[in-house]
Length: 446
Image (tube, rainbow, N blue to C red; front, side):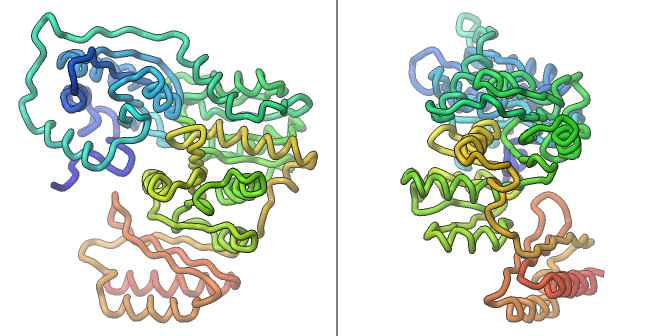
């Protein structure tokens, strides 16, 4: 059965346009609730959201759907995605739901589902829920309709859990930290957690109004964080995205530190402490070759997956890894969380900074990335990557880069675009290789 609604990270779209409508949200509640009505106990779902205006609409529709099939609902209000995953497990819920479109603009929204173990749903579960969306779902009899209630201390519970991931022998006293919460779900919890650990906190992106989430702030627009770090004389900056599962760091000079450098730092520290499991870390095909070489030089393995944090997590669980992530800033530390958690990852970075006693620019620069270039080529239709001319040019490029670089070519899963990425020791060679492949795709797709 092919997917009609679920993508790589739940259901997502522009609000009030199919599929992100109140009608479908209610049906998702009914379908997911029905799927997880297992056993004779009183069933429970927990729901969190980010700060989008449409979150009210989607939340109420979901509540109607879940209660209609007999599931009780616990509502958290604005809270990070990893908090929903954590609380679904700790509150013994049958299901967790996060209403968010992550780093997308406010007009988009999405529905992410977590199982009772706090992990994102399997493909099998999602397909079964999709199948129910096309059916008439039986409603609960009047006496079994679910109840809904709000829990006001959910943010406090999450702050406590996040702080527990920080080494007990360390404090953040003396550190001035800029935290950019993207006017999103972490606007209260991230600054509070840092302050409680002793930091001098400069908080930006903490004034959500329903329409300014990710707007000129956060991990996908880090200029605000960079400028604030420099102007305030901060030691480091932390930029989260709208649902706080992604992290980008800014050093004291205002320079961006991406996910590859963060993974290198944490992996090296875990390996030194003897706590790195699985023999290395899991990253995607987009992580820089410089990271791979850095890890190899320290006897640390690197396994690559398709793009998407769900694929990283799947491989981590299969191979017993406790560290994985993406260059874009998704960091998964499975000793502390069942999904990406930007705040938990930030605290690992801050712990390393405190222990080093050095500026962030020295502590966080673990390796020199090799030149990397990514270009997108639009095409009208067909399968240009299967054309003999394109295959020939790709094979030639692979031969040229052998031993000195990498080539990653993949079609987008959401639009008619071919993504062409190359990296290697020579920036000129990388640019030439990418341009030749893009030109070949354009010729056959014209």
